[in-house]
Image (cartoon, rainbow, N blue to C red):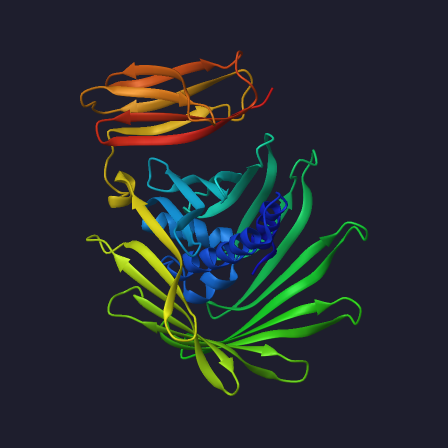
Length: 417
């Protein structure tokens, strides 16, 4: 699990929660992001697992066209909300941003707001994240992706999190051989040393062009050497479909079995994944995942169960919702070229968009973070440019929603006074 993923989990855990809720949120966050990467069709299987998680998440969301995903945890008697994602798309069907919410018992723990930028080749180049723990939105992190030829070459992460300025956090370099990722090296910023220090690296091998093994190593600063962490062996059906994955952990002198994952594929994506733990010289049931799909062959719900020694028990579930842009992102929408500038702004911003048809009328709405409508404007066909003056509003995040008939699109804007 990459530092960027662990970071936001730790931020969530900084909020006062019970030990049980903390453990559930942390475990669910890690497993959820792993699942999102597993379901990605846009990049090869090896890249889904070892590129920065947010990169894989972005690509996954764009491919699926999902507008909302809700994560629920079974508390023994009923399902409790744990996390939620709301995704937003631009006029070209790309994910322009997404909001992420973590829930505690009866309230929202934290909000994360993401904005995504692309290059001319339709590749993610930057990802901005802001965070709000209920005390006001602050700058969070900034990720930068650079490419060599067709592949991600370098990854850089810097963070603010209310410090007042962005500071180095993590960077990674990727090495390819004959178009295959063979080495991923991560470094973290040591502020005391004012230098980049080795953190983690993955070494990949292939068999006939398919992923075969992955070696994970961590840097031992005291001894200035790489220390083995785990070793994965894959049996692949294709470059995106593993059949069996075996994880072995380093015990100090040798690798020993730890986990095994077996996948069932009656379709393109897996419908079942069995997780087993190595105990007393044999594989024992540990977890089961079952995926159901809608009529468009998209994941509708993912159910996860844990083995109690005799039967499978509910653990958590993921519920996907798809909007108009998720049905076919290449369709010509009645409203396009939606943007606002400047963003961030103070005290006014211009919202622009083009309307080819309205049915029966179009509407522009501006919301605050509480979901309250603070401005409404109706419009007809044509090109539109509206100036919104927020002099009487407090600094923070606002959303503008443009809708016409069955079409609607919501985008985020930031007022910084």
